[in-house]
Length: 543
Ligand code: AMP
Image (tube, rainbow, N blue to C red; front, side, top):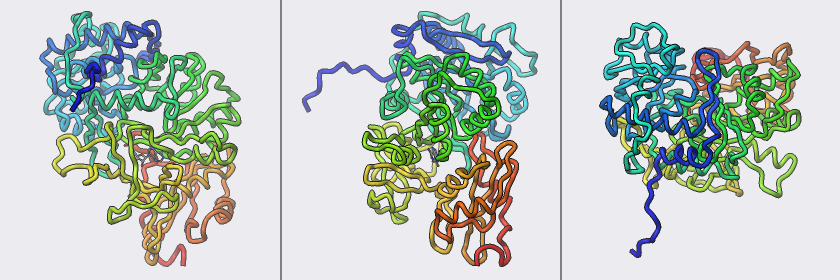
C-alpha cells in the first residue's frame, strides 16, 4: 500500500466543542432551567466547562470505558456531559426519565453506571429507584448550590461545585476514535430495551452527514431547537451539529407543550426544530386556536414516525415552514434518510417525495429483502424487510449475547417493512410487528393512518391489526378528533373507500379521546392491540 500523506487526526467529540469555542465562541446554548429561568452559555464557556468536568471526573476516579448515567431533560449541563464524559474516554448513558421507574433502574444497572447525574426535576425518580441500583456510587445533581434541593440520596455532589474544582486547561486525552462515547437504550416497543453504544467516530460522521444540504441543511445562520430529547438518539445529534456549524442551540428543558415551544421559538428566533409528528400536530392545533405565527421558523425536522400529508401541506401553506422528513432509529445513531424532492419534482410530486422516508445520505446503504433474505428490486412496489449498513449503524448491542445484529452482508435488520423505488427513495409501510396480515396479504397501517388523518376534523389516526377468526388479522382504525371538532366515522370510511382496495378498509372505526404513547411520544401499538384484542373475536368484521 502507498499510504496517503494526510494527517491522521482522530474524530473525537471534544474537537467539536473546541472548534465551536475557537470559531463560534460567542454563539452558544440557551437553556430553560428547572427553576423556570433561562441560562445562556456560549460555546467558549461550554468548552471550558466540559474540560473542567472531564478533569473533575478523572479526579473522582472515573476512567476510560466507565459508564456514567444521566437522568435529565434537555438543558445546557446535559450538553456538557456529552463532551466532558465522552471526552475523558468514559461513556455517557442517556437514561430515559419517561420510562417506568423499574425500567430506568434496569437500564442503569445493565449499563453499569458508576455515577448518576440527576436533574433537580428528576430527583424523585432517582430517589425512588435508588435501592434497586447496583453499581451507582455517587449522585451528581445538575444544579448550583443555591438550587440544591433537599434529598435523602447518599453521597450527593453539586454539579457546579464539581466543575469549580475542575481544571479549565485540562488537556483532552488522545483516544481511539472508535472508542465508545455514549450509550442509549432502545425504547423497547417491541421487546426489552437494548443498549446501543455510539463511538466518537460514528457520532461525528453522522452529524456531519445530516448537516449537508441533502440532510437537514444546517448552517451557521441557524438556531436549532431539538424537541426530541437529548436522551433519545443524542437529541438527534443536535449537541454536535449545532456547535459543529456555529448554529445556536436552544434547549427547552422539560416544557415541550405547544404553548411553551411557540413562546421559545418566538423569543429565541429559532429557525430549525426537530421532533416527532405529534409535536408538530399539537403545535398546529395550538396556532389554530391562538392565531399565533412562527415568523422565524424555516424548517422542522420530522421523524420517529411518518408525518401525515396534511401536516406537511399545512406547515408549508399556512406558515411557510418546510417539513424535512427523516428516518432513523436508535441503532442508526439518528437520521439516515431524508425525503426531499428532486429539482424536477414540484407540486404533488414534491409532496410525495416529502412523504417518503427518502434517500440515504452518503455513508448509509439500504436494501429490501424478502422473507428468505433475497434482495428485492427497487421498483417502489416490492415490499420487504429493510436492512441498513454504514459506519454509524450498530453492529451489535451492549452486553447482549444474542449474537451479531447484522447479516452476512453487514446489514442490520431494521424491523421496518417497506419499498425502495427507482429513484432510490425508501417508503416505510410498517414496523414488521405492526403490519396487518390479512388473508395472506399485507395491509399497511401507515398508509391507512395517513389517509384518515387527511380528513377534516381528524387530529390523529392509528391503525392496528386485530386477530380475526377467518382472516388472521383485520384493521381497526382509531381516530382522535381535533379540539372542538366532530368526526364522522362513516365519512372517514367513504374517504378511505375512494382511495384503497376494498379489503384494506378497516372493519371498525372508533373515535377515542387520545392514544397511548411510548416514552418517546410514538403511538404505543402494543397497548392498542392488547386493548382491542377480542374486538373481532366472533363472526363480526369482514366476511
Ligand atoms: P427508535 O429506535 O425509538 O428511534 O425507533 C425507530 C423506529 O421508528 C424505526 O425503526 C421506524 O419504525 C420508526 N421511524 C423512525 N422514523 C420514521 C419515519 N420517518 N417514518 C416512519 N417510521 C419511522
